[in-house]
Length: 291
Ligand code: C2E
Ligand code: MG
Ligand code: MG
Ligand code: MG
Picture 1: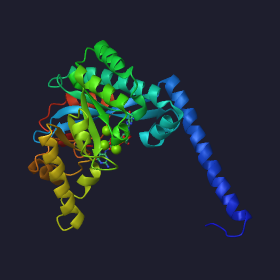
Picture 2: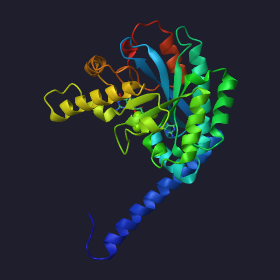
Picture 3: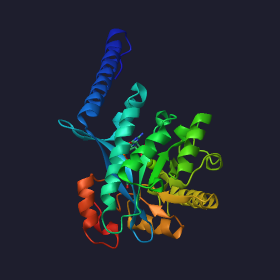
Picture 4: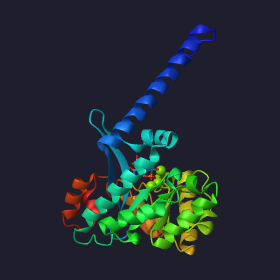
């Protein structure tokens, strides 16, 4: 509670600011340590064929393995890294680990053609990126078509001609481009015609209310998913549903003609050793091993 008369209110405010500044400094410090000590890891979450449940690929999700604080999620880290310019280095480390992990998964039966989808921040789109991608893929013997570059509207929003050139170059090289969190923020349909998009990922906020036919929002979100699905297919894009958590959501999305699904119903993101052992178990549908 904030006090009206002078001093106390100001003091509470100062302390909150100081806490924020301290927290931020601590994250910046952790990031520097993590870069030198190799605490960054790309965990992988399967993206499955919605009808068979078989992994078509894996999304690489950044984790920081802090020796004292444990496994840290990207939410607190990415924003700070974008502001202080360390996102470039972190992005390179994650990209490298993601491709290395895909190479290991590839040796398992049935996994030879799977892909890895890596998230990119706007700041990572410099002119050296296409060369960097081809260098890493070459070193691990992974075909360009097996790397999916995930971007959000934040990358496309300013219609920076450089970003368009770089994306086109990456696409011509053979990597695929996925538009992440589609339908939220400022995402615009015109991105689908202006940029070389191959995959549309429908944001999890649309999926959450599926299977609640009694709710107004559930009905409306169903219509929005159907619309996004139809437009994406007309633009020759494959469609992934994010955040699928129940069997019912999966079957509804399947009936709507969505191609792929990702979410806790199938699997959480896993560190590589755990993923390898789960995938080694023979299975028909990865959902039977959810967790
Ligand atoms: P995103 O790219 O949309 O990734 C999907 C997020 O949803 C991940 O959160 C994932 O763990 C979570 N998720 C997956 N299935 C489910 C589900 O069934 N239910 C729910 N509630 N959530 C689910 P995570 O790993 O915390 O990542 C958050 C965001 O951080 C990502 O959203 C992405 O925007 C960003 N991010 C992650 N890794 C990287 C990276 O290496 N580089 C950059 N630039 N951003 C990253
Ligand atoms: Mg993503
Ligand atoms: Mg997403
Ligand atoms: Mg997201």
